[in-house]
Length: 303
Ligand code: C5P
Image 1 (cartoon, rainbow, N blue to C red):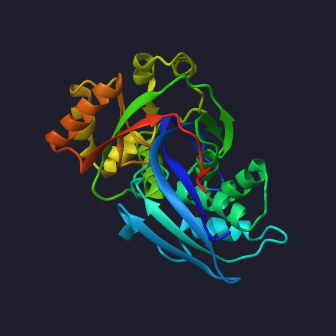
Image 2 (cartoon, rainbow, N blue to C red):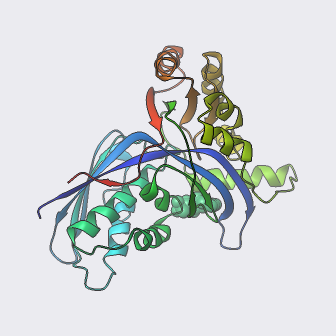
């Protein structure tokens, strides 16, 4: 076998309920993940033992580390600890998921690297085994393996698949520059402390789950929530205009995606999504507006 290519989707959070900060610095979450049809591709090619190389191309590639800090390389190195695994790979990442955009692009690349290296090295690890390694690499990596729609608890790494009728039609307003996930969580803590907020234990929104099951986009649009949104807006006030423009142009719901700065808008159907993307571009409130559908499968071997 010479090369293995894996396609992996971005995610949007339909509900992101952030609980109290834990002793390890992470937050307990209820994180309803939804995989959408914006894909990165990761190709793995054999390399000599101990060689872990990476090259990144595509949108925003210049902002992705091309050394051992790359999340996909870290994932490959974790998998290489498996007994009997040959260790050495060259990874080629083709980016379409916005970098540092709150859509788990780095986590997606890590998940794709796990699937690609597992095949390249002939390990044949179970999906549960890969998910365990994924959780060590990052909180959102297990979901990128699984795809679809799922409820994440703990740091977001403990997943229960959810039934979602779909397809749901989304528009994503991409921003210039990214936001650091850690910085957004820290800002969330700071705002909560400043307002002396009592932080509740996160709970699944059952009305949102019902809307997902029945495929009711209007009901789903009304239930989208993200506890990180005030923090993302505090760090990037211009996102308020983006969210307002989406609502004014008929979005059924709008929110900052994860830690931002990408904004997500739910549309009634494909035609409405097209119109909304055009309106957002024309309003000049984003770098680019792209359409996507969800749910879609997680990291998938292409060959
Ligand atoms: O797990 P991951 O490395 O993707 O998380 C990035 C950062 O996001 C963490 O270092 C932490 O600051 C923050 N985070 C958090 N609580 C979570 C998940 C992430 O505080 N449940």
